[in-house]
Image 1 (tube, rainbow, N blue to C red):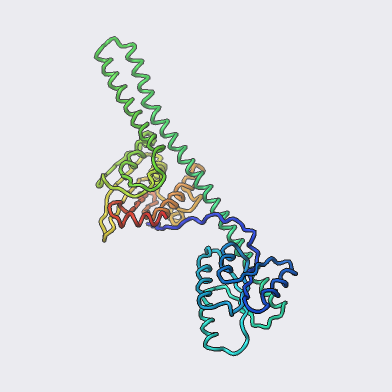
Image 2: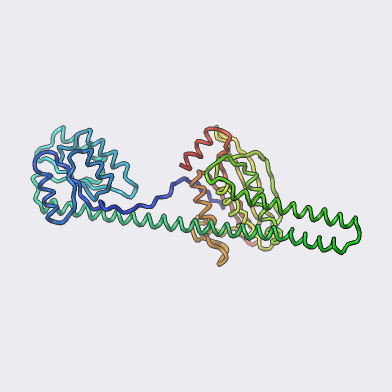
Length: 408
């Protein structure tokens, strides 16, 4: 049973409400239509702005507006092209309403041509002149009600984006806490050993034994220094994508999880077929992905097991890839949960899991344009899970541009 996650999608930014959101922009350059419409809307308490040109109309729409009323004679080919560019630049939630006042009469080649040009403008209401004030107001109110629903969708998107950011921050803190606990445990073990060795040296009258104790203490302190170097690397690493050696990041994670694996009776098999494999990535994000996968694998092997890690390179048609495979002989993932494991609050750990680790991992994958393949077996006789992380190698200009485009 397998599932694959591929994606690259930027997060939706928070959208601030504008004081111009309910305005109606009026463009009727000939006759008295603009004055009459502005007076009608003013008497109804409906805010409006009279534009003198298509360029001003477009600028006011970009500033924020609920709808626009414009006469057909203002929509030349050039004007429609300019207006269409503004409409196309609207965010995904927006379907800006346009009320177009058309000229009554028979259909002509010119009118059909203008109709075809208007089609890409999208949400267009056509009103044939002469128009009763009640008809104009009724049409405009329908357009503004639709625009209000769009604003509600905008706020829901913004709230969802804020909630996602809060979850990402909470999971980042949780990962930091788990790493800090691992670091403290890793440092505590050799320090306890040094304390015991110093005690033995004080009570030992044999010079040869003292030398042996001193050599052992030196080895334990070297272990502390190694852990400290890996820890300082977290703090000093850049947060933006850089040329990153994958084996170095993988090694730092294994150093910090060494005691945890020993306590869980987990043996690690590490196969490095591409020691110089490099990717264009933030080392912190790559480490968070690896730490999530390794931590989950250890949690799945509560009664011991084998953790298999394999780093290799794959050559393809002009796009070499780096593949990092992390497999375990744990309990596996139930078939019912597999399609949703990258969604928030989905966990196989019960009350001990937050359900955010793989969700954050999925966000990092999408942001960097990486791929994740998952294979799992959940059964009484044989079980386990294999995650394969596939990333463009940072060995070609094409690969670097691909990752840079995904990050942008």
